[in-house]
Length: 113
Image (cartoon, rainbow, N blue to C red):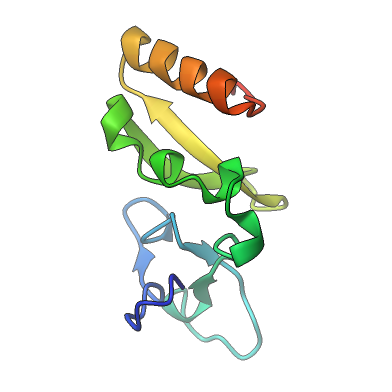
């Protein structure tokens, strides 16, 4: 998915009920997939056109510098809507303040859920 030659997808996490490596992978069934593993495919979110946007911001894709966790990209629970918006979970109030300040500085829109 990210062009490094390593297969990033193809593993279903049964414990979490979603594809492993949510940063790069999503559940996208295509006939004749016989297993959930086979339905874990690369997301479209790593296109060169996303450089310079929140979709391609490495600090949001891997937010450990903010004391936050990445939950991949935002999608509805039923997987009806799949976006490239980074879904970041701050671990405390200070992390939330830092993330909001970073987003404001970069001109990003923030959707609180």
